[in-house]
Length: 186
Image 1 (cartoon, one colour):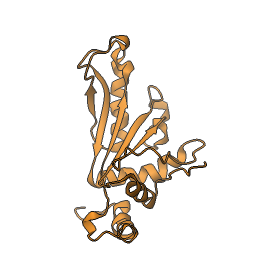
Image 2 (image 1 turned 90 degrees about the vertical axis):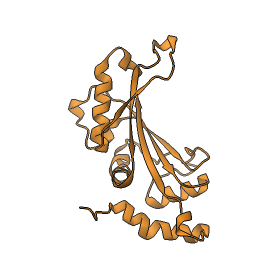
Image 3 (image 1 turned 180 degrees about the vertical axis):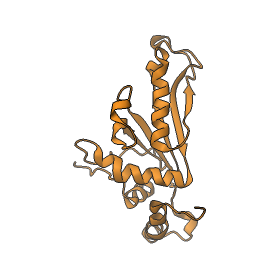
Image 4 (image 1 turned 90 degrees about the horizontal axis):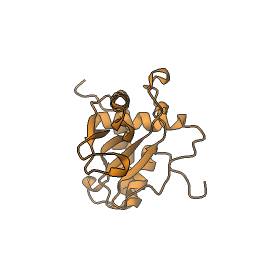
């Protein structure tokens, strides 16, 4: 299992990277943008009253990613939301390496097509530095989640961090690996 290479990583190395080198006239293979990490995060503001919601969110993130999730704490107190500094109000997972490639393969190939009335993800969700953010509204689009065992339907955020210098390079990279970006008119 030491020499296992995920399908999408192999596709990136054999097809996407050479295409990007030609398209953007890179002089070195090291200039080609690549995906560094994928971060999944979920906020559970209601976890202040009900701790089971946070535990449920942690378990669901672990099921989806196959990696242990960590609890996130409030950075500052917000009186209107009854949140105190240091309270656990969310969870996150950072994926790298083969686990990241496997997750992206499942996200693009299995989960996103299961979204009702799906026409692609917003193409303007780049941050100006080549990173892409995506919001999932229902965790049940992932086949790992058993619909009968969830506490409540909740969403989470996915941030795809790339080494691209510009949004144009990052957009080309994501399109070439198969991310269904929405066309401007759609």
